[in-house]
Length: 394
Image (cartoon, rainbow, N blue to C red; front, side):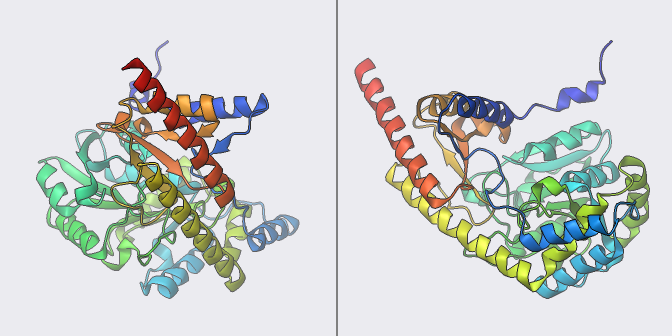
């Protein structure tokens, strides 16, 4: 019996195949350095764990309202005001099971069969796949160093079609780590408003920026649909908790969707997340951001010595997007060989880019500085062997 055709638009994560291979090598006794998965090596902050344990001990295990714990919605709204000077009504904030839950709600509300959605290439693959699940047409816009690896208003205008219904961007982005400026966000918002289209902004790496201030699209585009998460900046990946900020008129239909799709997000996780906004936790999160910034410096310096410096250094998240086309035109083969020969796991660009994925790889600086230096030393040996073999074959 055939399954639904919508599954044809959902590709498997190649990084998960590579992760399985890396774990198999570890099980066989090899020392593998993991730079493939977007999850730092930090544990969940202690105040959050304590709050979660306290919630469980107090019996906070029953359903919350579909849109989330009122106290958490208020805490998120207060954080927007404190960190960004942006007033967001708590009623516009919908708590979801991870950012994926927020993306699902926004997709179901804003796109359907016959609609075109503009999105950068490269981008996080789930952003593409969710649009396919509702039979929307995805129009990918090739971006590069000249556009700051972002979908700008100018590019969106160039690729606009009669049936364009939504534009989705990410800032900071995965896989490139690049940020949209407030001016570009404003221009995108104005473009969408003038064409009666939705603007969806993925901000799940918000707060993790280096050399540029963290900001939210809500400061320039108050009617945007903004997706965020407790996973990346707050270190709560396994707690599966995110949120969606939506225009007031969208809250009621989104609430109906939430009731039917997932009923409510995890109650213990929501109570735990309240502690993420305490001064103690905020200080720890800033310390971690500084650690990631130092790791970024180590990795960029090492890559430059190897002749692999990115065209534009990442401004946020914890990724470096590298063009390896001068070495090979098959990023999957490159990543497999690096794992098999030197036990360093990085991600092929084919997960993220439709047009140029075979020419790029993504490296996550999610291991400590010592491990990054060791990974760079192994990569140097790997590249030297490749050069020697190429010289012999020539």
